[in-house]
Length: 435
Image 1 (cartoon, helix red, strand yellow):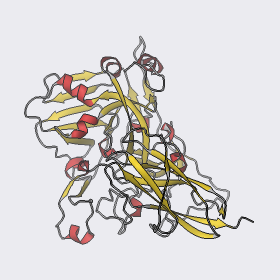
Image 2 (spheres, rainbow, N blue to C red):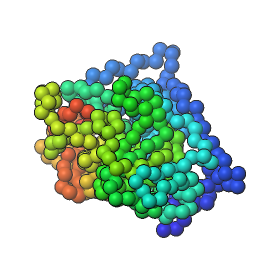
Image 3 (tube, rainbow, N blue to C red):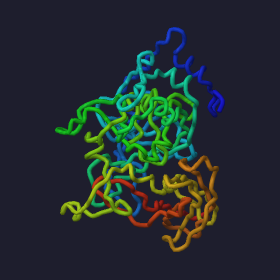
């Protein structure tokens, strides 16, 4: 592979652009204070209260629109820690704009500055050769690689669960797709050399702060078993869609685990530790667990009775999903005239091979046209022509099938974490007379 990524930026020019020339000092500093992007005062209508799933549920959550540095107006769930959801209109293409990518932190101490002259990626623990790599080392000492991959919060679409569960009440916008460029994790571990007796590999970034009381979770830590196939696919990414990562998405580098949930995609990655024991920190031992059942589903009754065995969500790949992006129901569509229906689909179990649309409650399905194939872990766009027959309300439904034959179900699931949602999406439209 050449020294240039697909967007034409060389590693040398990236260093110059980040200020790592002869002086070698750059501080990326952001004042992470939101500015309201919603209409203020002057009789602006209040956002309707969210009431959960119904015949036409909200696509996004219903928090206020806010702006943060390097970000377009996004939907705020919380500001400590920062949780921002991507609005629906930014999913019209296969790749999500960097400034529109959702933000999810777990602790209220997210970093707002990184001095690249001092920042190091340290590889330590049960290794033959502990390493302390500068940003320039990542760019100059290792062969670059790239992968198009969806990053999706484990709790994406949690607001549709019934009964409701605790956690960020995301709509569908806690997901994004990007072309990630970086260094293979396997190359780093090979150079460090893993010693016999290694059990897990732990990842830690720069976000700190008080977590749930009594759990000692002042840092966000995630781990994989040594030998897990996810480690072979992973990269330490320093470019996102051909540009340096926004601060809120993990500058200067983050982990990328294609096909896996974002909880393992540690931002601001600064430590990789090879452990000789199982990681028992809160974020592995208590948080992000799913039922050990075929679909990750259970019932509140079984959880309350202690019948459910829970396992880390890392055992699961992203389930197959598809979404209608437009039309979005905000205006009428005319009867008798063709309308282009567009959307995206993805899966962590192989590329999307089929997307189908129904306008009669799922009795009949018509196959849509798929967009370009950017790889098995990427969003894939789709579109189809649909002509409404008569005025009134109609609900369009969309479902996807992946290369392993997984098809979206038409029923929801429930688990106490609010994870793995992939029910068939529906969009209610009002069809108006053409004259």
